Amino acid sequence: MATEALTEKKKTALYTLGRGFAGLLFRTLMPVRYHGAEKYRDAEGPLVLISNHVHALDPLVLAAPLRRTECVFLGKKELGKNRFLRWGLTRLHCILVDRHNTDMEAMRACMKALKMGKVLVIFPEGTRHHEGQMEQIENGTSLIVLRGSAPLVPVYLDRPLTFFRRTNAYFGDPIPFADLLEKGVNMESCEALNERMRETFRRMIAERNG
Image 1: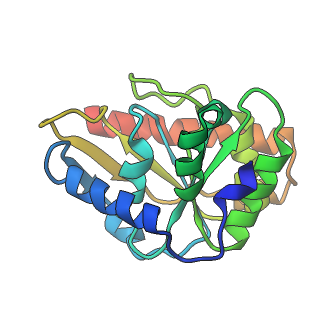
Image 2 (image 1 turned 60 degrees about the vertical axis):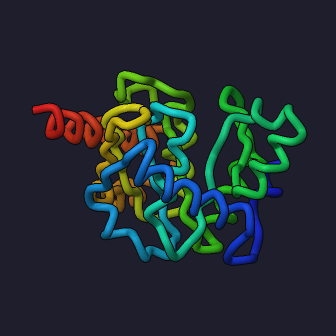
Image 3 (image 1 turned 180 degrees about the vertical axis):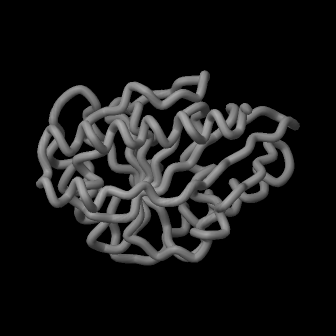
């Protein structure tokens, strides 16, 4: 199931249509103001974007400003139970993952996506939290980042998408982890990277709210 999301093609019709719709939606009915996204507008990957998850359309919010490369998204496998929804998600490059167990198929799909130079979008908390915090981080995120050795870019969304009320999307600088790689990919380095992600989002939240 997971590998269905990957394709050698640079563009797919459904992705192009979805991104165009998202761009229009985020300029009108559900306005989004991007901060720092211009640094990654023409990024080709490999790249990992991590964000807090506050709305079902968050994947589109992150993908909309990236013009050159299509994103690959991680989503919970429960979404694939509906055949029609699964068909659409795989054509939008969604890797369906078991959040509660070690999912080696999804891990291999993520590594393949990064090797292909794609932008991988992950919500490390694994589910939506409307308060916007980033505390309960799944270890799988750090494992993917360390194994893939791709730049890790945090994105903070200050509020859920709402009709006619602006949401701000803040793209931060890459989180360094080269020193952790020197210690090897293990539980200790994964937890250390988890804490760096938590600290980064605490700082981003404090800066925007302070």
